[in-house]
Length: 335
Image (cartoon, helix red, strand yellow):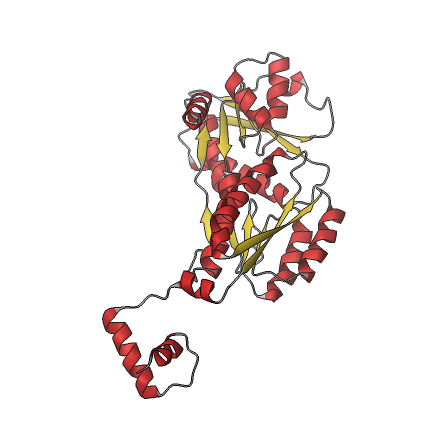
């Protein structure tokens, strides 16, 4: 049997007899065979183009981190024919829809996407799925869209963890303030995320009857407005939970007004958050590893398309807790 015949059987190119197919399959079964994906891709000069569709990182410190992870993955996988095109939109609905229409008209092998505006993102993904290519969401998960991969935190579970951190070591009745700090645009999947965190937060106290009594108060604040926090809000408050990355707004107010003895829990390693963590104003930051989300998102597409591997569609990031001491140590290790 010729090499050409074997090659046609392995790659399912037809023009071979059933007898030869059975012989080759028997040999493969007996001795094992693994297709060299890299060699095949190189031989046919195979290229893979991925689209990355994210908010602009200008003025939004958080979004630089996933871009760093994406850039790392792009460099690592470039030698295997992977290239990446970036599509950015400003943090408003109009800019998102304009860029979404552009992305829909272009052809790619895979898409990495962060759903920010809820209704618009659902509409975009519902249409993009018709292309029948792999899609990975990071940061926020739209559960309404089936068969789309998600890499990020379990928001409910991270809120549950925040509740545990708030209650840790508390022996008597306590008053908790939940500060919901939002942007002017409310219709975002980010809103869904922090609501899930709040649900998980309350669930912790509900499911742990052995805890002392906790009293909860919620306030809503717009991050663009000034003078919305008052010292009256913090009277008798023992701990504050901010279910997103804007915890630095509360920390600044607490420090400026010398409100001592208040435990503060929030999210994300923004520079301002870390400054207040190091100052001891913020006690705990829950880190959702956005850089790793970006890297793993591209890696997911690479494994699925280049390596032809079966990959999980749901990958939850570990819930990492940062305090002043372990953050300082981790920075020393990096240096």
